[in-house]
Image (cartoon, rainbow over all chains, first blue to last red; front, side, top):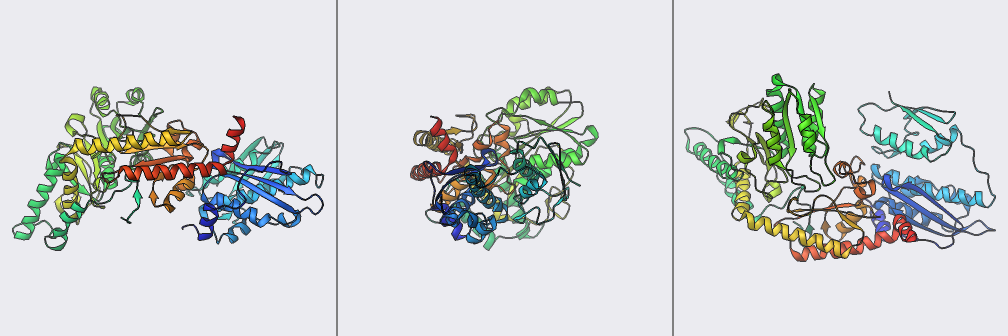
Length: 207
Length: 396
């Protein structure tokens, strides 16, 4: 599957790209090792909590740049409560779809926006630092896309069990041993969970 | 080819030469007959095939009867590797390959491993040369086959085939020697006798011949178990239908290169040198992958462009009418970084930012200038969007 014209437009001429001086909040997600990294900068009005300005930087492929561009378009001018509702599915839809193996790029951009918002709220006393729990793990798993079909592994019922005990994460997966994406998905799970200092060890079981 | 498009992905496939299309035409339109006996149509095809075979075989210093046509390099590799492994399994079940070899070799090795063979995987150094000390150590009493890729398909490294021959021949028993020459054929001189190889795979479409035809070189006296059974039109290794037109095109492509082999390859090398020089002069933070100079095939330049990602680069070049390849995970179907670059010790960023240019006889200096100018602009634009570049600038 090829990229839609919308993706190409946002890739070739991205909106809101560049570094922001003195942002009110900033977040970086992804890593160079995974091949994609996005930074989102926010300027937020203190009283109305409206996102007045937003910028991004992206190291990544065409869909990575395009989804970061569209996410900033979607968030600009919204207040934080409304911006918190923006998901990777909104980005996908606004771009007229993405090839299944590229859906994870839209997750990264949406994720970075949400982290930037959360960083703003924590810094401005609008919320507490959330406690790490089993729910945090499940929320992270919802961000992992099965590249073959472009849907997340939780919706696809590929996650059978999630456990968290004394820093050890235990995940039972429902993926056949001939599935070529097993290694890829396991790697993604590790990348998403290793960033939490509470996580000391991750065990992923396949049938 | 699309008029005006600059095509620099010739290691995958190359444009058929106009002379090749012309040479094939009579065999599509008129002399399309299959080989046969006693009747004039069949006999004439027998003779034509023998003549074409002899001229293609001569390019690697082989005899006509040592060449067997295939659908391409992959079939030739399969026939040789599975054929040798199974034919000599009684003498041993140990094979040697390296981690940087062409997928044909590695997938066959993996298949044979599952079927009960033992495989040793040699490492490579930072320029892609396989570790010969490891080869010496890997040889066992039951080693029956060593296989290698003469010119690396990613970074153009020319393996030391003579030194490998010496090591294999120093063993106290026969170890069969298979070479995939997909990238080497037509780019570096190959003499199968001098190199002591037993089997070799070559193909036409990488040297401006037609797609759909290659050949297996099989040294006289070397046995293979037969891979594909069926009616033997020419011999038992070459069963089923065949295309005389493709054979004619293959022979023409060979003739076009070997009529001035040194001239053709020197021109390619001069063009590649010019490309590398221009890239290094105009784009900062760029690094050559693989060896520099004569130990590299004359048509391949592979560089890593720091702080940016290869799929985005190839997409932008594509919109400007320029076709190149990248080792980025994002551009691969399996979302994995290029295994050859990783085996050379490159990091993920270097692999994701790698660009492979493979030149052909039709590449011009003007095309190279246009490509480098386009890439210079793209690199600057993507770096302006890159958080990695931003933090590098900040650290400075």
